[in-house]
Image (cartoon, rainbow, N blue to C red; front, side, top):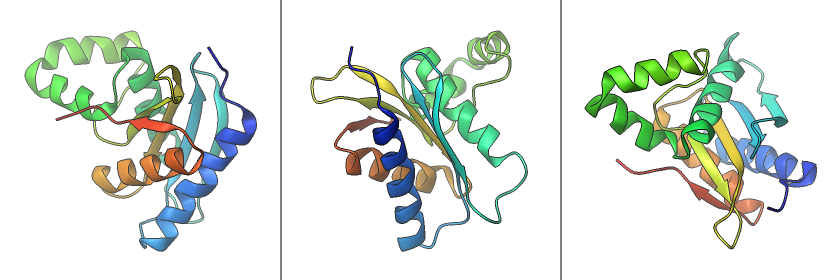
Length: 145
């Protein structure tokens, strides 16, 4: 597995925040995790709420832990709420099953990590994450409805 580089993680954060500015999104928290779940980059824009980056981390960590984008986790939460609640407890609460947690894949489809974004609507958070990942030359996997 190719490791997610610090440069790639920084590029994802920068492009995510650029997308947010261009689309006039609310202030965002952005977290990039590598495939092990270790933090590679983090940013919280001026004006974000106190725990916005923590929410972004939980979106990314939950997606990474379950091997699916958080959009898919949202569907699972609807279809199997007890299971998702139990997984959230197993992860120490570090899973938020709404859009905005996107897996990062390389050109060969190999998992590189995950991005979590929080601050605007979940759909806008996800769109910003996808833009950031694409700008770094990687592929975003948000899951499906």
